[in-house]
Length: 271
Ligand code: NDP
Image 1 (spheres, protein in one colour):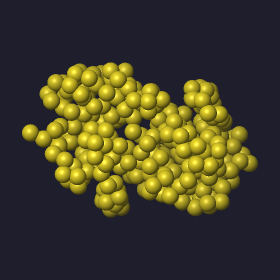
Image 2 (tube, rainbow, N blue to C red):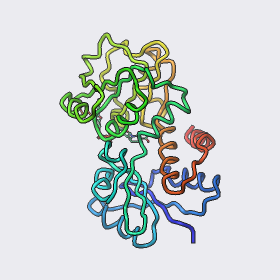
Image 3 (tube, rainbow, N blue to C red):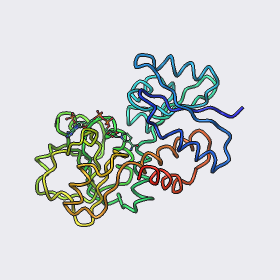
């Protein structure tokens, strides 16, 4: 019997994780199946427990359950602890171990796939929700010279900045006028609604990279704005998706898949 894994969420039909993990398994010769698991909105724990009891070895957790999975895990990695959210569960006998690979996935996409030097860079992070929180620690580990969090609701950005040591700054969008950044990461959900975070003009430094965590929607208003403002590189979040999946695969199987061909395959499929 192959080992069983799944992505749990609601909705979950759109998830690309089964395709990504099937490719990883084929490439590395791992004997596993990877399924979709739709949990009712009020039954994440019951659904995860049933999967565990049925012999499941691990779960990826997607919206809206990452916070609940954080409470569900009996043991947490440092990344999960910092993110206060879990996107990867590993069942080890009776133990439930929670991890968060989103931030590592972003940094790997930035540094390895896009050739972006986060070390020494002036970094602007847009948004103060779960996605933003999850990437702060891995970004700080790269030692940027600045990490500024901008959010529509300033109080949320301030709370987030205070919960990390390392000189994080919180600002409104208006306060960014006249400042420049080498890397701007959109971790808001504005792109989902076809909206642009209210960035002032001129925030992209020469050679800047603009990164939208959103993927699969073509050029988002943020990426269109970045291109018009002269950002040197504009990237969506598909690479982050594949890289966070690879980190999960490594946690479960101890084998690191080659992400490049899988990313190429997905790009081709969504083109
Ligand atoms: P949350 O709902 O937790 O947070 C949403 C954030 O977006 C808040 O900071 C909110 O500001 C801000 N926001 C929403 N609309 C606008 C707008 N029109 N203008 C400016 N700011 C706005 O969402 P998450 O943090 O969970 O997710 C954010 C995005 O990241 C999603 O689109 C998700 O798809 C993506 N994501 C991608 C991943 C990948 O692998 N590529 C992984 C994880 C997430 P305020 O506080 O003022 O309301």
